Amino acid sequence: METAYINLNDLRIGRIVAEDIFANTKYPIIHKNTLITPNHLNVLKAFHVLKVPIELDGNEKHQDFMNDDIEQEMEELEIRPSAATFEKRYNDAVEEFEKVFFSWESGAKIEITKIREIILPLVDEILNDRAILFKLNNYSIPKNYLYHHCIATGLISASIANKLGYERGFVLQIAIAGVLADCGMAKVPQSIREKQGTLTEHEFLLIRKHPLFSFKMIANLPAMKDEMKLAIYQHHERLDGSGYVEGIKLGKISTFAQIIAVADTFHAMTSERFYRSKESPFKVIEMFKGTEFGKFDIKVVEALVQLIATLPIGTLIELSNLEHAKIMYINSFSPTRPLVKLLNTGEIIDLSKQRSLYISKVIPD
Image 1: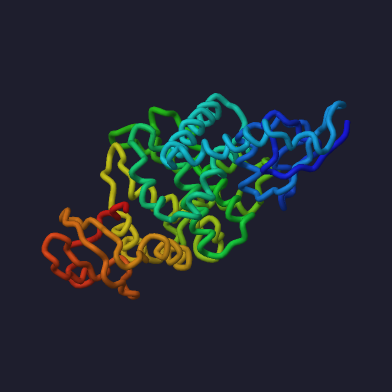
Image 2: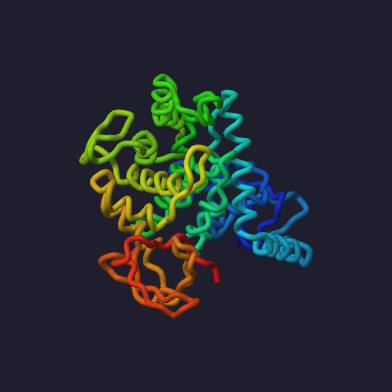
């Protein structure tokens, strides 16, 4: 059967892929004979694939598939994602991930293609609009926290890696690794995962084994880089040796593991849990640089600081006393504590000196 290479923007749902498609990857991101779906279009866009090999049937010629009907179909396809809010697309991704997680509980193997389809369409959006980072903790709810946490950890990990200057292939890989870091929790009984009371010693030790369970689940995935597999295994290790599974220290822990560790901790601390209220993102960053100093790679922490704390002059914020204010000046030595002007009185407050107050949240435009 004849093959034609067509532009991604002209690719039609239902077409059959004529050859394995690679994107600077060792293994195909889409296999030969795959029937194209909207999710495949998102994956191809995420990997910036410009030309796609498709099969032509006996009645087609290369010029035949640039007709008005197909162009109209593609225009409609482009309109639908932009019409939905990011929150809707994010919640849809969490819902899909929950279904996949349930299959892992039943013993199913991880399908990396499915994980790509879930997370990659969201990655470009968060890289293009860092304001989304301030919303992720608000989307999360205690009942479905784990599934939100996996998706959010992937997105925050990608944002940090991008800020650190890693090339796109690694940014996408760390997004997937962030999503899969806690896949091993599927091997921990739900009654333990969602227990609201104090864990027994046995239950606590079982929870701490989840990075090992995760590693075993992803160890044989050919499409995942070895560096990412190691990062998943090490994402609860800490530079001072206080982490787990092995309690290793600085020098033995990979930077990718630290990226996931910071993303994981940041989302966990800023999200509502059954047993703990959420903290302000700015307060959590101060924790990274204060009580938790020495546990996390300073370069990774600084990348998160740049993403979260360095807000433009004029940004509207809410303080811990519920007062609304506008940022007037960023102190480079204390970016989480800028000079702010109260909206109701016009009073200027230096948060670096008034330590009883802190930024609780950013107010959307």
